[in-house]
Image 1 (spheres, rainbow over the protein chains, first blue to last red):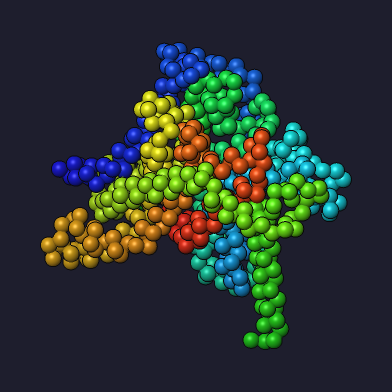
Image 2: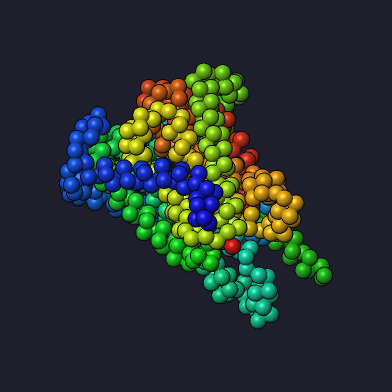
Length: 291
Length: 280
């Protein structure tokens, strides 16, 4: 009886999750074991052949290395910078509300629109960035940020950091405001310097919030699509793609249009995220009591 | 307080304000470029050396975009998808959040775990599976496909926010309603929901913005130019053949400003919903 009543109240949510999250996951696995015509018609099962072909793809090692760099660089820099920004926003000063609102803009704005904006800012001929750097004599000639193999990854990572900062800063800020004031009082009475207090008191107490920020950012940044998709738009091949944009190109864009191969990579991507989710559950020590 | 200490405090506040101002400038600088470019006439887009501000300010660009039938179609698609999916989110999340906040039952923990996992999975990783599914169902190029996808993936946040709020409402209020002869559903609708307005507003705004900004599923499923939502549609202002950066950014501003205002309204509640399970 109780079970059925619960089903009544949870039913709409369960139906939605089953139909639009679980079913596509099953469809993804099924597609990874199948062969499709170039127009997307199912042509039967091929077992693990798509996975074997995935491992043979010439671009795969580069794409995996790009993904590791993409996630590690963005998450690391974002978390370190956010520590400073949160410390600042945790202080009381005139104009703090306005600064917090400013920080919301890159978070609320659609990432695809911010990405297009950076394509324009990075533009070789008409972009304001080259103009500003030339005026400040930081470069001697304009840089083709998005067209040059040496700079495109760094240019994309910078945008990734820019859009990840607000959320991360807010998580650290929530962690900071949860630290009771008496702890600082005690450190002051003990005569600890500000720097010492930060490392011995603040950082250890921030650990839970930082872990949450790191794991969630790993998931978000790994999943990120619009930045690489947009900023790497004009470069042929897969030299600057992540596992997500590579998957997308295989499925929908490149001459390959290979649904089975893309689905195999999709399954790998889902497994990577699952591992991160398990890490998250461990981090927040998910228990029924807390549920 | 001694004058020296007061002086130090003033200096500290000024320094903090200065740092805050610098941060705001850095964060907003790209969007200043967006606004300035949006207000430039076509001829000023390709100037060397480039200028930040327009020589001739042209607010007419915004009106041109608003009057563009294509833009109106994208705006309509975005509104339909975001409003409908948000409605579904609230209708599905409210009973689930209320029941899990008030009752312990077998499978409760498993349900919450599934919800949490769906929150971690953006549609991005599943996009090939989603495409296969909607292709097989004949729903490619329909609003229904976008509405369902957005509703499913934005459900988790709403459940967390609402559940935490429902749990904080004293049971006695509901017990009083029960004594007055209210059924469970009536208690929820007439007693609990009016008290929960702040949480509902937060859930609504978050679900709306997430759907409004959704890109990859719309990019994949919507082929008909007239049915594309804003995120996908406006990119056609700049392609390999035409480069109307001013119109692209005028359209972007129209899309961004309302959601920034909405986001600022729920700023305080965001972290709790996004770091579910970790914040009590």
